[in-house]
Length: 292
Image 1: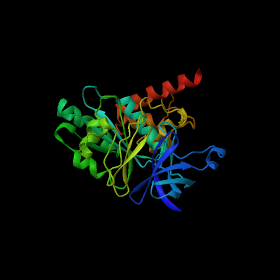
Image 2: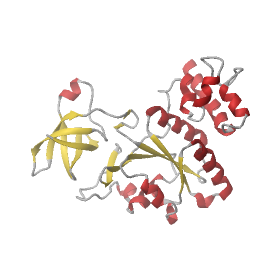
Image 3: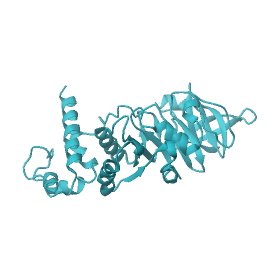
Image 4: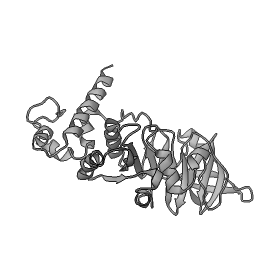
């Protein structure tokens, strides 16, 4: 048996990388019986059925660090949330939902402020300061002139990284700049063995270097966070978490209650008013959904 990583799944034919070679593999029938199937990012064990044709069969899926339902993938270690400073304008509510989801899933978030050439420096720095003070890694980029690209690339090492953001924020330009290839239009990223092109809408992993992959995903568009209970939302606004213990009520929503630790921290300028207001909006939307 050989160990490898699932790069993609097209019509139940899995591309599995093993020691730099890519095998086309079917999955053993036992997975269907157990209602589990391999997904991109899975670490698997395979048996080679035809070395000449680079064919094999997946016989075991190793324990997953995490599993995302939409888009389907496993063992993601990092999400780079791309925020356009202009064209389109920054969607800060979406960013805060994304960050809460990453905290919930235990996946490291990195914030990328892109198209910084289109916005005034003080507006870029305002967003940068809010999130860097919380403790998030924030990178300023402009893919067109390669500003910040080398710094961003350093964060890809030894990670399986997905890029997330609204349409038009510059995800494709960033990935192309990082890899110096027009891969997001052609649907291919060169690897050492340079095997073919792949334009599927499924999640695909592309190898950058040893133990480093970029996930090309069709998902993360609406970023529904239904998996998080609204009463737990504040836990995943990580700068709020330390103040929850100061709330008088155990089930405090941190919106209308008296003697709320988070509202007190807000009054003392220990947390961002903008972040708090977006927390309230997200909470109320989650509450409205549950009531229907």
